[in-house]
Amino acid sequence: MSLSAVGSARAWRAGDRGISLESPVIAGILNVTPDSFSDGGRFEEPRKAIARGREIAEEGAAILDIGAESTRPGADPVPADEEWARLEPVLRGLRDLPIPISVDTHKLEVAERAVDAGAAAINDVTALRADPGLARLAARTGVGLVLMHMRGTPRTMQLDTAYGDVAAEVRGALANARRTALDAGCEPDRIAVDPGLGFGKSLEGNLELLARLDEIASLGAPVWVGPSRKSFLGALLDLGPAERVTASVAACLAAARRGADVLRVHDVRETRQALDVEHAIDAGRGGDVRDARTLVRPRAAGGGS
Ligand code: HH2
Image 1 (spheres, rainbow, N blue to C red):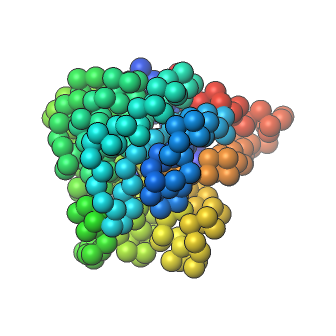
Image 2: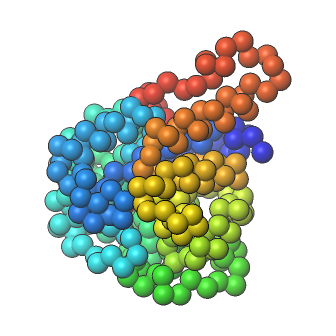
């Protein structure tokens, strides 16, 4: 299937931004934590985090996803005040970014402050299980909402990774979470779903979810997916987190071909290049394109409008 044929003429709305999903876009990851599994400790200092946020936009991301609490397997929860203290200076420093910012939090208190500070979307890895109040906040303010599937909590999620039919179960749980958001008054084109790769899934389960992503996409909601540098890729190829870039890009392309709209990645530049090549190949089909370089989207324009 061609990348641009998937989800054509659709958009994900987040606050006053409309992100075209005519072809897949990138959400660049910025973790302002001491302990994230891949970039923990690198961007704890607000000045460094702000510089990386700007770089992510320049490298071609359409969304910047900022997280201040690690959700890696076994991670301990962080109090709301501490999470907000990590986020606030970075959000304030990136207020003028040309692309919308989503904040990766499941705490209502943190989400409310983030929206006040200009965040356009909330990325909730608990899909409203931690606090259904997030749906009411999104409905009231019009921010975008990402509902991600996770079994249990980061502390417990890898204890039981057996499913009867992983894609069907994840799809069902996401459909229910989406229904909760709609019942709270969220508009359908502001609610995205995410199968939650690595969150309570085995290696085989993660691969199965990627292979059957079209079933998640059949929900009709924009689909986020986050294979970036995750341990299932490390287990598959016996690689450490920093060595998983090529594997991550390959997983992103596979996901995009099966209906992913938003690829949540650490390696923005590399993923953008892969998507650009795939897009040029698809768009150049038929031979009526004179200069294929015109098919590559300019950087830093962002996907927002
Ligand atoms: N993965 C992580 C965190 N948030 N959100 C969505 N929507 N989808 C994901 O797959 C996802 C997510 C975990 O990755 P990362 O943020 O790099 O690590 P950590 O949780 O250790 O900060």
